[in-house]
Image (cartoon, rainbow, N blue to C red; front, top):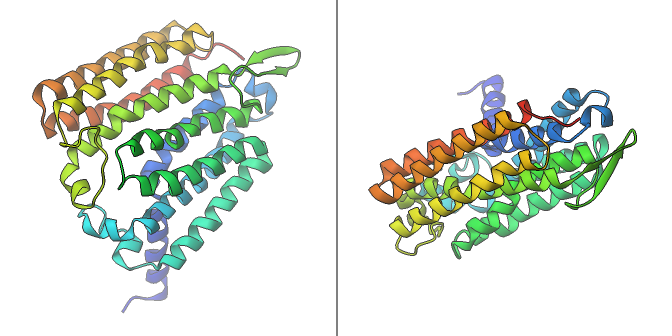
Length: 312
């Protein structure tokens, strides 16, 4: 029989698993980097690095809430797949009611943190992203492969959330003024575009590798109805190629320098190369290479941009 401390420890682990911390950290990381990339953010906020911690906490709570709702809604589906069957709600260790309560509380606190410490515009975008992911993308996965396109929007919105948290404005051609300096807001939308396009080769590679599991659960995630085919591989090539000019935009809008331009271009070419290998080899091993290449691609690109920031 488990002791009270053991029960508390196990429940804490279940709550953490409900939030999908590894996925959430990756998502929130892009939000924090986008915030720090805002021109003159150090003048907008007295302690931008401390604010980054608050942004990380708020983002983790909102993203964790979206992931919790995903697990509640997909509990029966998760129970059918080996890799997800041990999740708290799917396994029966946690009730649906408790899962919903956890999601509502964490989501509300996360949105409140963003609104109170940054601005309510970024908080509103975060709330919209949560809704889009949990209530539109999640059920759509069983209906049509268009779900991947729909899901790419909440997947890329963290970049805009972080940027708007810093700039306070949303529209791409809006400007904001800091100590007499007029700054452009287009950088946030460029970062959004980078993360939006990146998701297609990334997610299709995952769906390729886990195709049997996803199919058994009724998910329709690959662009071809026939499953992992050269058509799917061709789509990964197209989107990875589109990343090359889009990832160069931070340099051309004056946000970052030439060093990051070289680094991101090399990372993009490497991803394209792996997608071409997937097309030629057409197997799960090649799909796994694309998947791991994409995992490396995004953090390297974002960190290179941040390290080479040249404005403000």
